[in-house]
Length: 251
Ligand SMILES: Nc1nc2c(c(=O)[nH]1)N[C@H]1C(S)=C(S)[C@@H](COP(=O)(O)O)O[C@H]1N2
Ligand SMILES: [Mo]
Image (cartoon, rainbow, N blue to C red):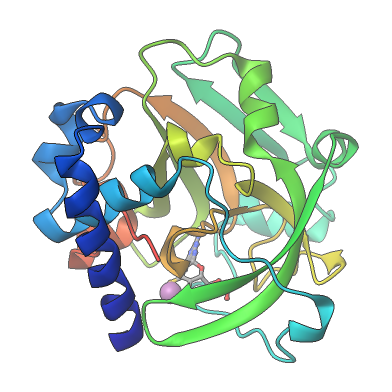
């Protein structure tokens, strides 16, 4: 955590310089990000965006893979619907993409696996203070978005998950810069094995420039929205709403 904060303050420093350079206003519309992000979070967000919309998170080699990549948060969704999918090997499971799209679609696991895939070895950093390096293969989210055709009013993607902590189902959200980032995947394998239930079967998000809680597991539905106000308590994610974690969890 201390390390992350230090890194973040370095980035924040960079952000200041670059903002004075004057490009920030072109990249961000003031409304959402100024209203909802805290000052430090906003600067981290801007720094990342200024470093490059497509700047890549570090990638590692097979030799770097963590021998033990622990699970965290929910490790087994309790709903009857999920249990049934688990029992049938997710054979008739489908990912739904809807909301502000021209062509709402459903994707079976087979359809996702038939799309061009990307594999990456990256480090997962949990805000609780542990990290692990894992290998992920999945469909780049950008490819799915080009099929459903986002409407011009779409600005966020909300990921709705199958699990809950006794209340609302887990949810997370990202903006369109992260949605179209080349390392943003809907992953169905981890370390060359089908994604386990503990790690989010059948499909989880990898959004590699952000912390662990953004890496939504058990993704069932992706909803394109114009705002985050209508989701949960309005902060864009389960932990953001419950305990005030930053919506933009840049690392
Ligand atoms: N649906 C869902 N996604 C989730 C969580 C969760 O509880 N439910 N926990 C988050 C947190 S805090 C972390 S660190 C990672 C853990 O992923 P892992 O279990 O594969 O290690 O998933 C994230 N995504
Ligand atoms: Mo986490």
